[in-house]
Image (cartoon, rainbow, N blue to C red; front, top):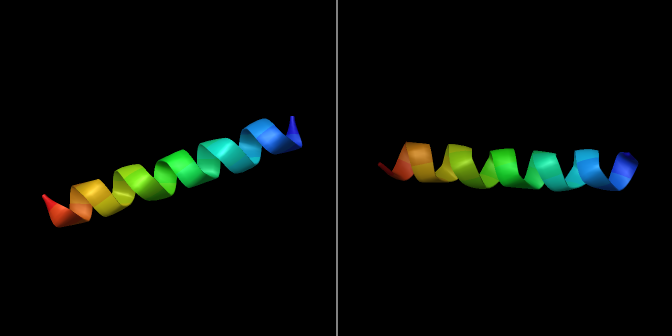
Length: 22
């Protein structure tokens, strides 16, 4: 699903940001 994929990308970005912050 395109929407699902977009959501996943957003989630990944958030995780990456958190990881960078850590």
